[in-house]
Image (cartoon, rainbow, N blue to C red; front, side, top):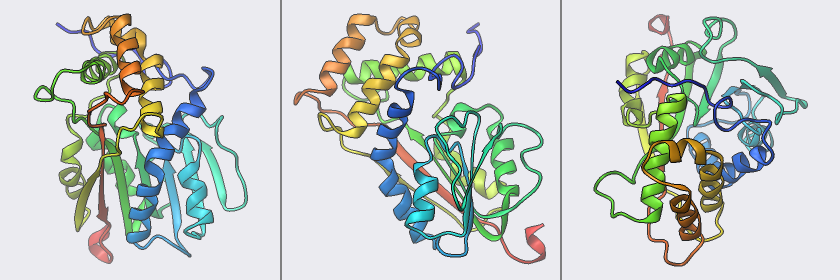
Length: 269
C-alpha cells in the first residue's frame, strides 16, 4: 500500500522560510495575474465590492484588486502571512481554510482562491466552506492547475520532471490536480448557479516567468521528485536546462478557473 501524505504545503515542501520562496511565488504571479484580473473584471468586480483572497501568497492579486479594480476592501488570508502587509483597504489574516471556524463570520461579494485547493484534503467540504463566505449575489472564483503532461505527451526531460513532481507532491503533501476539471460540478453542488470555467496555458519561453517558476519549483521539490524513482538528480538538472533552451517544446500546466454565483433571495440560504 502506498503511504499517505506526511506533510502539508509549506511544511514538507515549499517552506515560506526557505530563501527565495517569495520570489518563486512571484514568478507564478507574473505568469497568471493578468489573466486572473481580466477574468475578475469581466465578472464585474470593481468599486463597492468586498473581497476575500484565500491563499493570498505575496498579495499580488489582493493589491491589484484595490489598485486596479478599485474594490472597497480585501481580506487576504494565508496560513503564513510573512509575505503580506496590511495597508488601507487591505486586511491580513493568518488562518487555515480547512479549519471548522473558517466558514463562520463575514461574507464577501467576491471569494477568490488560486492554487490552494489542489493541495488540500476534503476538497468538497472546503468548496462548501468557501461558498458559505459568498454573500447573495456574489461570486466564488477558484483557480488551480490542470496537468497537460500526461501519459500521452511525448517523453522529454520536461514531461519526465512534471510527472515526478506531481507524483512526489501527491505522496508527500497530498497535492492532486486530477480532480480540478470537476470544479464546475463542485461549485454547482455547493448551491452556486450559474457556473462556468475556462483554461489558460502560459507559453513556455526560455527566461519567461512561468519557465523560471517551474525551474524553481523543481529545485525546491527535488528531494520528493527523486524519491518517486521516476527521475534522478541528473534528470532534474536536464529538465531545468531543457526549460531554458530553445529545444523546449512542451505545454505548461494550465490554470483552470471556474466560477459560480450565489443566488439572491430566500434560496440563497
